[in-house]
Length: 218
Image 1 (cartoon, helix red, strand yellow):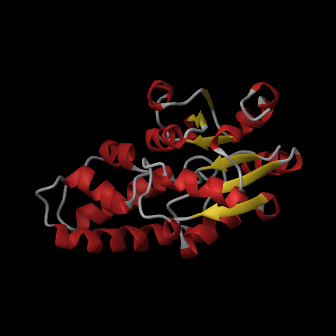
Image 2: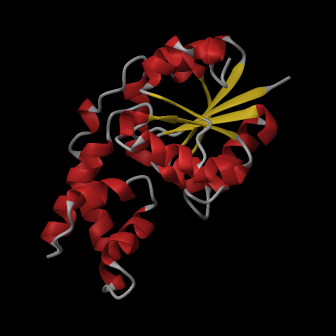
């Protein structure tokens, strides 16, 4: 029986959420918007257009959304050569691959950003496929990114587990009909992840790896 382990990347395998917060905060500041960092943090994981809409509201000047997204991309890009993988992220993917899981990444990143994230994880030999922002019409919390990851793996939802760090991840996985595992290393509280659909929650990839035999990824 084929099985798929689908992973979000930012905040789940690579310690980037607060870098995104800083980059978005500065992009908003440069455009004349005062957006609290805690509000930005809660929106990280959404597609750029949805993040801007959530933080600035529907009455904003939508013509400037592209400028904000481009500013964030440029600011965040300065970190590409030193993105830090979370503890045991690569070892976790390698172990799952050896155990017979098809490992697929489901991320809103693409292009140079995705390449930088994969370099940080350093486990390309364990990754079967990647579902990126370029491959879907709707990002998380829509089910489409997870559903596309399952298509790439050739695995049905009932034989898959999705691991992520945000409520958007948990909602996307739940809508796709897969079992959801949350991790706390993205900074979102355990209770929020559980409420959004997490079956169980671990501290980070290292904690999940150490607990693998008792997890949904056993």
